[in-house]
Structures are given as structure tokens and as C-alpha cells.
Length: 555
Image (cartoon, rainbow, N blue to C red; front, side):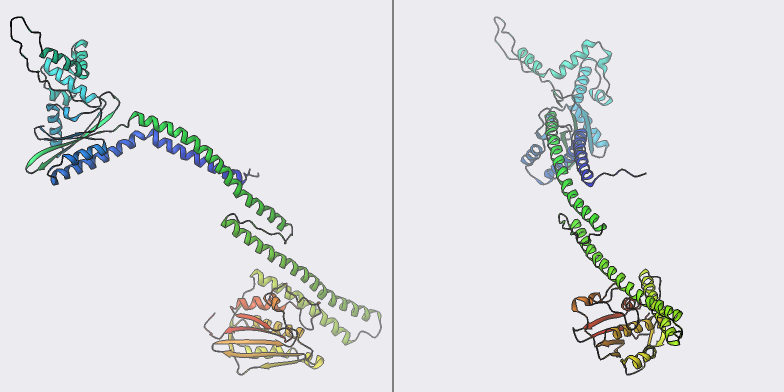
């Protein structure tokens, strides 16, 4: 079953769009859903740092008032410092709905005892005005029932619930009715002047103010950090008050901003995704169209996409591929034409001589039989060379190196051309100084030498002279085979070793060999790790050479 496929254009578009949506989702998740949690974590860490800074100031500063004010103002905190008895020493409050200075004495004692029990530190957290209400109810219970306010606040019990509902309402009225109490106290302080008596003023009754925390915001969460330190031999109590709940107006503003930001980001992401996906896919589409032409055999196609580095590299690779495939195709066509000619000639001669020997009496001579045998051997050699090239390229042929005398092997190769020397008048010289032992595959190297000499004989000049030179340079053996022909054009030198290379001149039947030997030479020498090459000047012949290492331990 064929899988459904989606174009790179739409796939890139959806990836960008999904990325933008996920990014917005994460932004909403952390800014709205977890805003309170992050705010609490930050404020707690901030409060702990402030607590440490205040402690350092108390130890090092002679007049810490200004520094404490600055710290409290910059962090929107309340800082309240007392002695161990609760007497205020320093006070800086920058929380609009909270007032640490209103802390009742019994609550101070409760916080102090809790800090002592915890090794000198305590953290008191509460929500809304529950702490304030607890204090007022404890005071109400003490005044009307006689229960200890500290025990009432610590145990969290509410004795007012045991009384009628009217008493509970009175306690709540006491928690929020400070202004009415002050007005009533002022009225009571100035009674009407009785007739016949001198007016006098009754001193204002001192009443302990309730603990004012989170006034007007019952959903707010607060924390008080308490730390007891010893400064100049005296105990001092540092209390830092912080609101852990972000302001409602801030949260509302963030939500409105996020709505606008989300809408803008979605529009931008949509436009960006469409633009980038179109740009990216355009280059790939053009390359794909060119690749289809290349697959159809149009090797003149050019790939010019340069939008991105990877696309540019792919274009360069495909251009190189098209060039090489074009050369290969041209070489293959030339090979087919040349091999067809080489195959047709011996077959025609074999057929012709065989018909003559059959139809004409007295033509069944040893000379005619030898022609048929020679042409058969030529045909066999051509087929074998083509098979050898295929096997070498496929990697199915391996070498079997051994130590042997290559000088003697060269002499044996040249002996095969004795008849050619006598009949055709060729001169084949071998120049060497000493016998040389090499470590190589003797049979394969014999084929290399034979093919190089064949090539020189086929392309030497009118003087029919071929020279084989053996010389040793340091630890390297160099074999050169020279001819006196027209040479190889400089632009053709890089291609002479190619298995499909043929000279651009009219193809002629090889005097000896099949004309495919240089490709075999190249592959055998590469199997041995040998260096090889050709040097030539137009009209001065060509020199084919290769070098083998004489280190017998090197494989």
C-alpha cells in the first residue's frame, strides 16, 4: 500500500504554525495558569534575601534606618524589628493593605516562641485576613469569656461559635470597625458639660489596635519571616512581611496583553510559515524537475538553486553528476561503435576464410587456417579484456602478491613480439641496469606490462620504435614505456585511463591487442597501491609509467 505523502511546502508550513501555537500555549500556561506559583516562589526567595541583607545591616551599620527603608521600598515589603519583648526598634512598611506595627503583643509572643522552638527562625503563612480575624476573635473571647488569647490563636479554636450568632457578629464588627471605635471614643472623651460644674477632659482610653493584614483582599496570601539574632549582646527580632499573591490588576493586564500578543503572533507565524515554506519548496521543486530531465537522459540540464547552503551543495553535486554521466554516455557510445568494429572485423575474416576453404579446392592451406586461428585469438582476447574490466570494477578480482623477478618478467613479455619485429620491422628496446625483485601479483603485473607495450606498438610513429626503461630511484622501481607517435593531447591526458576513452582520431584496428588495455592497467595498479601516469607532448610521442615500492615487507 502506497503511503500518502505531503509536500515539503505544506509540511514546513504546518511545522512553523504548530510551533507558534505551542509557543503561545506554553506562554499562556506559565503566565496565567502558573503565575501565582511562580510569583510565590520569587517573592519567597526575594524575602529570604532581604532578611539576610537586613541582618547584615544591623550588624554593620550604626544608623540602619535609611538602608532598611530603601530595602523595604525597593522590594515592596514590610520590615519590622523589635527587641525580645516586642518593643519596636525599626519599622519600614511598604505594603498598602498590611501593617506589621499593629501586631498585638500576644501574637508577637506566639511568633517569638515559634522561632525559638525552630532554632531562631520561623515562617508564618496565612491567606486573606484570617490572621486578623483570628486575633479579633481571640481578643473577644478573652474579654467576654476569659480564655487566654495566645492559646486561642495558637490552637485555632473559635469559642465564639459556642455563643449565639449575635456575639460572632460583634467580633467581626470589631475586626473591621476601627473607624467607628475611634469616633465613639472621641465622643466619649468629650462629654456634655453638666450645669454648675467645671468642664474637664477624660483621657482617651488606650485600646490595643487589631492586627491589620491583607485588609480588603480576603484572597491574598502573605508570609512573615521571623529571625532572632543577637546584636551587641541583645536579642533582636527581625520580621519581614511579604504578599505572595500578585495584584489582581496586574493579572488582568497580563491577560489582556497576552490576547493581543497571541493574535499578533498567530498572524506573523502564519505569514512567516507561508513565506519560508514557499521559498524552501521552490528550490527543491526546481531541483526535482531538473533531476527528472537528467533521469530521462538530458545531460545538458543545469542546477542553479543557491537559496540555501545545503541546496547549493546539492545543485553542485547534481551538476557534477550530469557532467560525468554525459561523458560516460559519450564514451559508452564510442565503445559500442569501436568494439562493434573490432568484433565485426575478426568475425568477417573468419567467415570469409572459412567460405574460401569450403568452396575453392586447394585453399585449405595451413596459412588460411592460421589466419582463422589468429582472428579467433584476437576475438577471445577482446572478450576477455572486457570481462576483466567488469570484474575489476566490481571488485571481484583480488591480487596474490609474492616476490618475483620483474626484470625477467619484462623480458618474457617482449619475447612475444619477436615475430612482430621480424615481419613488421618493429624495434623494441629494453633498458635496465640490474635485476630487480618486487613484491606483487606476477600474473596481474605481467598483464599490465603486456597492455602497456601493446598500446605503445599501436600508437608509435613511422619508425616503429618502442622503448621499455627499468630504473630504481631510492626504494622505488619505475617502469617507463615510450613510443614515438603523435602523443596525447593535454586536454585528453586526464581521461586516457578511463575504460571508455578512445582517441578522437578515426578508430583503427589495433596491430596487437584489443585497445582496451589501459583501463585494465589502471585498475591493476590501483589494486597494488602503485603510482602511475602519462607524460606527452604533441608530435613527440607519449611515455606511460608506473612506480612500485621495493620494500618487500610492505603489502
